Image 1 (cartoon, one colour):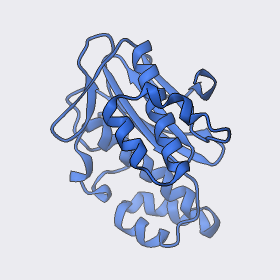
Image 2 (tube, one colour):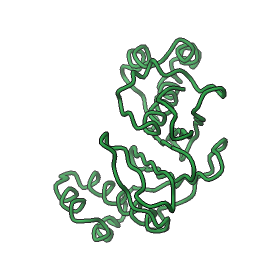
Image 3 (cartoon, rainbow, N blue to C red):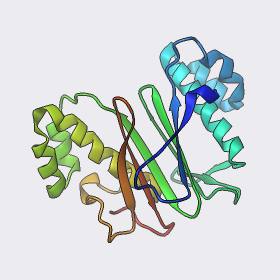
Length: 214
């Protein structure tokens, strides 16, 4: 499992935040070796996944998460809205995300964090998605990207918004278009980064009392 996990240096991330990348591509059938690392509920869920690739990605994500939690001496709890957090004081916050064959897992001390990732791909209805989710300033940047860059531009903004929603723990209760682009004067520090070829990610961090707005 260790060879599948690597640290990601995120420019602009505050001190005390550690981000890990997990390679979930199961080219050699590794996932079967790690299913015993999952708890009973996770194993039952995994065995219900029909597609072998999807099952392998799920097993590898959960096994890596469990390994990293053990190393941080932390145990997860979940809020009423499903936001993960720690039941022990050894680490202050946690977030994870996955897309395609890559997962991101983040830990922080003294901050609330949220992380998101998307595989960069062409989106058939990207202009409609952008009109619904982006504010005026973001739409200007989206338009400037041109037809070849529209999907990547949208996914970059989308991951940033999702990261803030995860950090705040509000889920989709806040309309995406109402969340403006990052502003240093506001509570959340949001950075966009590329965790691997063909992927875009975002990390949001801020004080525990921050709201779901940039």
